[in-house]
Image (cartoon, rainbow, N blue to C red; front, top):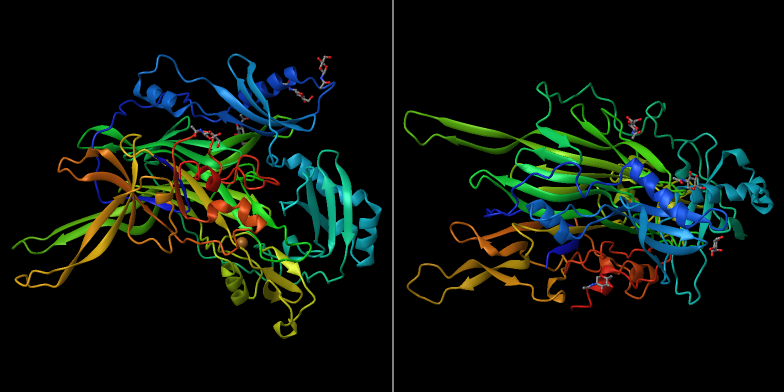
Length: 633
Ligand SMILES: *[C@@H]1O[C@H](CO)[C@@H](O)[C@H](O)[C@H]1NC(C)=O
Ligand SMILES: *[C@@H]1O[C@H](CO)[C@@H](O)[C@H](O)[C@H]1NC(C)=O
Ligand SMILES: *[C@@H]1O[C@H](CO)[C@@H](O)[C@H](O)[C@H]1NC(C)=O
Ligand SMILES: *[C@@H]1O[C@H](CO)[C@@H](O)[C@H](O)[C@H]1NC(C)=O
Ligand SMILES: [Cu+2]
């Protein structure tokens, strides 16, 4: 029992660890390294050879490392493997409009397995097909007519694609998206200027328009005050302060060897995946006393981001996003801006993805790695009790941060993995409050439409209202500006964390503090508290709703003890957490059922990575964490 998904950040408990078997440094290249550009090209040619262009249409929806089995990685690390784990790629392709799951052997230049997927759901949308779909309305006369009728300039219209989800249809839908449009004309903030009422349904496979609806003439909100650029005269966010910088005249204290990063007592591998973004593997920490590396985290990555909106209007009810499974959280990563996104002492790393045709795309400056010093103190003591002397010892708080930013439509998710000298790992989404309405509150107060909580831009609905007094029916949101409603919604971030604390056999323990009455009259006190620990025996024992759970959530190694005999483990420390408020039988919630609990523990299974399933576009909730967990309930 060692793999778990949670919406929590992870942190070390006060308990210290014991022995580890990890004694050698990984050598370069590492079996968990993401595919290189040459390997992407190799994949493309392997698939080309098997499916020649003359009678096949081939679209690459996912290309990434087919991870070696955990046992193979662990024996390789221990030096007991006779050969290095195989170098393979996992490919999800649509071939003649059928989904294939392909595993290719790279050194052998051949396909070793090729399975047709017949279940519900479709792979991640490619950028190229979204761009093509977004262009479709501009060749469609009824659409152009609707734009003209509203008195809008067609050259100022920008369209984007939305996954359609699933709302109980029995019949399988084709791969389609809804294309919805916004307006620029005097603004760059297109999300603030929706053209409501027009919906274009596009078939992605045939790349043709299947449906067109124009049902309202709500005005497009004004351009005034929507510009968020620094150059804008009405500068809305963060006034500019005098220059500030962090410099390390002796250079950074970390080293990067391929994808392996070493800093202070930490050693870990940083991978990249088109779907998950950063993947942290094999994080271990050097124990000075034992003079050995000790394992902490086999792997951790973002499994899904679930974003259901609460607006039931015709153009809005299906706005339920799975940012990793539908759009590719890594695919949407954006280059980081030196000195703005990352401080002066940051080091940048590139990453690669395959495009629709399988051609490698260089995404430059996707990660930044830097030592963070914010003027805080990690540890200190001033000793004044010793006569005739004062001892003062202070250690400043310096941590190591790995950062990536993913821009999925209007949202910019700033995602940090932070490693601390104390042994803690902290995962954060910069300033996210995953609760509906929170960003809107901020926005209202500032009288601006830019949200900085999550950062990025709010997605708003055009409306006829100019004052809250006019609102009589359900508005599903807050009036932010004239003709502009901010829609209520949630963001649920779900992580897959496979903790291997001091070895891969770990248990999940809940430790609660219980009040204990004192019966003995001879004792001066009536009560005290003591810690009572319970080890989860089944998966259902280990499903946690944070609002209800009391006490500490621990991942321990039951086979190891400290020299004093104490348990060795890590404590999961939740950040802000949220519970879904949709009913269990609501279609978005069936697909997002993995949000029902904040923490789930499942046995290790290499193919159960994605909390919302492997094929999320139009999924029906039959391949989610909530279902897998019933198997061993
Ligand atoms: C594979 O086929 C695509 C599409 O025909 C072509 O653009 C690409 O160059 C080919 N790549 C390789 C490596 O064969
Ligand atoms: C494509 O052509 C090859 C050889 O000409 C043939 O073997 C294969 O069955 C064809 N595939 C399809 C899907 O038509
Ligand atoms: C990717 O792009 C960056 C920035 O342009 C460049 O430094 C790097 O060499 C490129 N990588 C490859 C493999 O071309
Ligand atoms: C691993 O997960 C897959 C996909 O959910 C499932 O089909 C398979 O039975 C699982 N294996 C085990 C041993 O539970
Ligand atoms: Cu939001």
